[in-house]
Length: 284
Image (cartoon, rainbow, N blue to C red):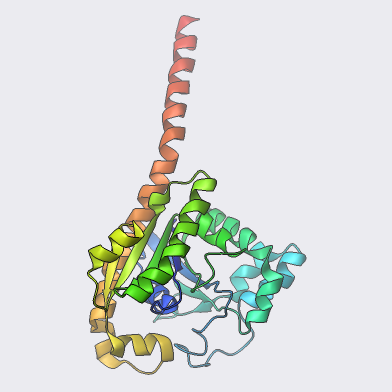
């Protein structure tokens, strides 16, 4: 299972569009499923944008406040998801975000519980990968618990001075939060949108972060992700979707590497312990 958090800052590109592109291109080998959770405290936009308000019924993050108070969040979460798969295969799912930012005030205790749910969901069926859209402000404040518990945190930024300057304090806060929890800040990296006057490596140097992936500036395809509409054959073959597939593969591989890194000390200790037990048993 992988948990990837997407975050941004003011002056940046659409974090939600990047996360949605990841969901639509996420590798689903071995019968796995992917869930995009819109956890931006400033409100979600996919239902009104990409889905053009075609969703019938009351689904979404706002329902989880009541579910949490009733100690039913782990069960009710799955009933709040919308199927975005092409063939109704239930393997690309969306948790719609808040329709009103005011609703975020009641979710202070929900963010942490959601992070735990994402971690535990690997035992459900064949397992899930979770993509968490934190928007421009969700990586700070109480919603930051989702960033701190993720395997990988990807900060989306353009190649502009304004975007880099806005991202710098967010990156420093994220790095400090990870280190406070004893987590390696190498889990933090950039997704660079190829628009602006700066070179990608200059942005990386300024923010002191590795580049996880680069996405092209493709306004036509991005328009479909943000506002909906029929992109036709162009959308599926667009430069944005092609590079998003490569980004998704890379992010999942990095998440798996991070999980293996975290497990390595425990596995080594277990191996040593097993050897000690074997030596004791042999001496009897």
